[in-house]
Length: 514
Image (tube, rainbow, N blue to C red):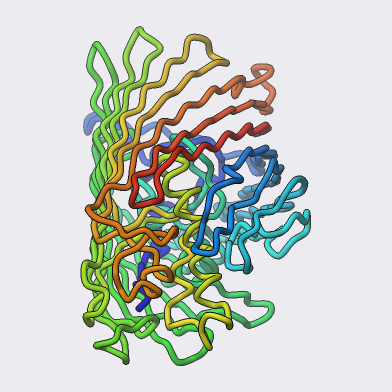
């Protein structure tokens, strides 16, 4: 039985039609800032007719080449590797109409060593070294928007982000550690309004045709992939840089490429964010929680061959303090995603965070991401089975945090404007019995890890991460260029349930943002 993990690309909380395409991290939310009731509102600043932002990124990595990923003793086998990405975004504004265009180019491993895991299910295509590989060019935005009476209307290709990025993540927010590589992309028609002019209340409805997320990929030029549609209703109260709360409901209908397996689910997600300023520090308290419910035949179980009921949930929270006058930031992050304790019943309880949401940079993203890809390779090998079981593709989570709990304190010191030093510690536990599907099947259903060792308890291990950032400041006051060098390291101490031992990943990213 293959467990189903669902995470959906949902409507973003940028209810205004004009969405900042910039790559610098910023708290999500409406772009309205309220003045006191007795203060005349200042006239809106005139937008420039053209704004261009972008990023050129080169990442050199030293992966854990000797990491064993399956029963056959296959190792990751990946030596030093260099990958690239050029992201460019432009916004054009004319007579109240705004057009957005953004794309990624050369999104691939361009030099070095590919990994040894068979198959092509990995969305980063780490099995090949090719500057113009399968996903080297990607359209992120091609949209038009403007005001029609009290309504803001937007239509076209766009990205999707909500709250802390737990379910919908545009891949344009810097993680604490690691990297963002994807971004949920949809063809969207959205209508938004502020029904009470004096209140920061925003309402939006939208309809999506999903282009790419964790559960569906569709190529409109080739007409290939799953047909995933979404209807969304969103309500947000609160302005940017002020306390705010938001809730949305989503209905998703997805037909797999085989035109047989079908998913119909609903989602309710609540997000709250409260900045608090004191003489000693600027605090931020934020949380997001969601539940997914419905029915799917994307996967099945021995007791329910025609599909599964879906009922799962997840939550994440952040407490952050930026001290003053000290150049110190302290944060505590955590997350929980439900797990399916009984894989043989008629219900799927696994919950998956978005693959661009980070929970450390090794335990989930590198170690479990590689083991998941190897599991799919084993299950789809014709020497092991006539055909992969239904839902086998859901195993390849691209390192997403799922069916687990994590806690992560982080400390960052910025002694100079162009220098920051960051360290974090992550502890993680599973919310279901720890098992690798193929090895557990070979063991007669006994929970077993990728090495064929029986597992017990829920411990996944701990991880220490560090990062040094040089630069990331403007070369000149009027120059938009911001070069930076980011060196990161992650050292995971895997529990016996994941094979034990230490797994280390070191990366160096040279990037230029403008």
